[in-house]
Length: 109
Image (tube, rainbow, N blue to C red):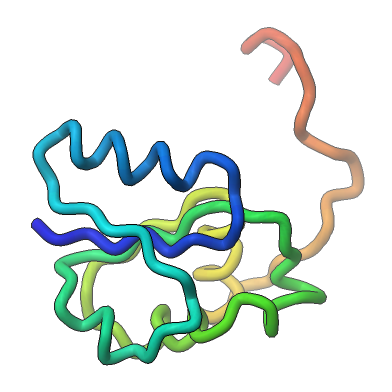
């Protein structure tokens, strides 16, 4: 299986590619500045994390919104990637009232 991992500058994107390769998959990291046609040769696309906000900085994500709309392959979004997919497909993405990143136990949630 050929998997494209779209990099948005997140610090773990290279680990996604590494672990997919470890699992025997052909994984390639790509930046979102490529034309949609370049990604048509992949069997699926993973949208990784990054520092942007889909609410105020979607233009910094290059052609990634087009990848969501125009590619007819399975897609997986991680962190920023899942927010991008939701926004492009008409969902509402907004800043949380309170941050959800903290150290705690599972019982806290």
